[in-house]
Length: 167
Image 1: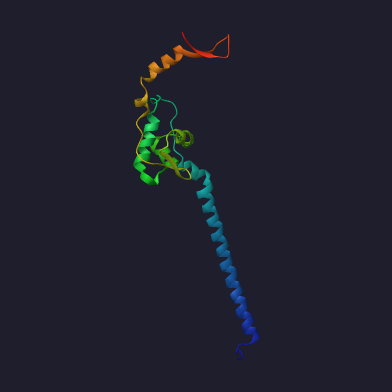
Image 2 (image 1 turned 135 degrees about the vertical axis):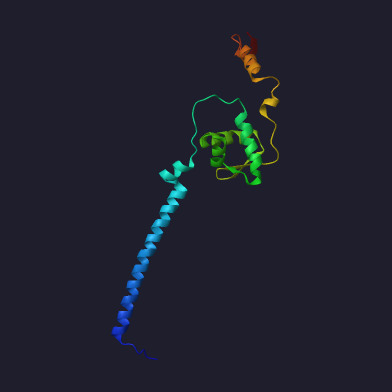
C-alpha cells in the first residue's frame, strides 16, 4: 500500500512534529528543574525553610527542677501512642533544642528500655511510663548532694586499697 502524500508533505509534517517535540521538551526540562528545587528545599532544607521549621528557644531565665524534662518527654511519648513522635515536633512542643533532645534520647535509650527508635528522628514508648526519677531516691536531691560532699572515696596512701573517708 502506497502513501498518497508526497515526499514534501511528509517532510513538512516531520518538521512540524519536531518543532512540537522541542517545545514539549523545553517545558519538561523546566518542570524537572522546578521539581529538583522542591526536593532540595524539602530534604536538605533551604535557608528559609529551615529557619521556618526550627523552634525559637529563649535562652536564660530560671532553670527547671531536675527531672522535669524527662517527665515531660515521657508524657509526650505516652500521648503520641505507638506511632511515636518526631524529635522536631517534640522540640517545638517542649520549647527545647532538637539537638538536646537527640542527645537525651541517646542516653535514655540505654537506661529506659521502654523507649524505642521508631524511625529516622522518631521515638516511641513501649509499655507504660516509668515512675518519676525523683520518687526512686531515698532522700531529696539537696541532702544527697550534701552526703556526696561529705563522703569521699579516696585512695589510701599506704596501699592500693580504697577506703571511705568521712570528713
